[in-house]
Length: 299
Ligand SMILES: [Zn+2]
Image 1 (cartoon, protein in one colour):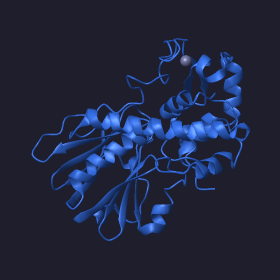
Image 2 (cartoon, protein in one colour):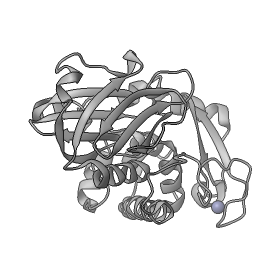
Image 3 (cartoon, protein in one colour):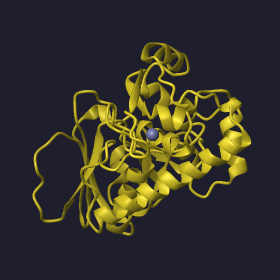
């Protein structure tokens, strides 16, 4: 699932290409992607783009007159940009947005139709799509501590819950917990003050470093090859490979419909967790599916 660094890059690339220009038409290729009937999607055509913003893992295009197009890519949704005059390549487009300068294509790999487009009006419609999690960049340690400890969850769950913190999923939570030297199954209300500070610093540092890294790799291009598995990640997607800091083999725990990765020496005092027991623990701390986690409303 594209998380804060990737979504930020999508928003920046879109902003330079479409803000201030006109959205000519929206072509819905797969009716299931459009989850709203009112306002009608056709009423967006011919409006200028007022701005682009990220809210959590969603991308929102603001149109003149207070309409918003809200895209959630979920796991396998991706965006592509085709400059005006260029031919579109094949592939399974769910929707195409024709702007003055080019065409934005929303597509989704695989057969699970999870990516979504909502058309909403005004701030009220907009707020329904904000799960309300804390934005880590620029947040204070006090605000972070308050959000984290308001409920008692495993750290893995807390970091990926969009009602608690914003924009983080499976990949960057693995990386943040490794950088913070904390176990994914530590409970939030058991954290010491020093551990909360370490986690907050790690979260800010990891997200800022990866955003900058992706930005310099992308340059002025539209982001391509958006993936949750990046060269240079410490533990995420690296099961069985050596931890870059201590050389211990990276371990995994399977839960819900995903898998988390951690270094037993750096994060758990050398303890190896039994996958099955930990899976049960995480299962109890988890909605059944990724859709359920992402669809949560503010508390
Ligand atoms: Zn290690």
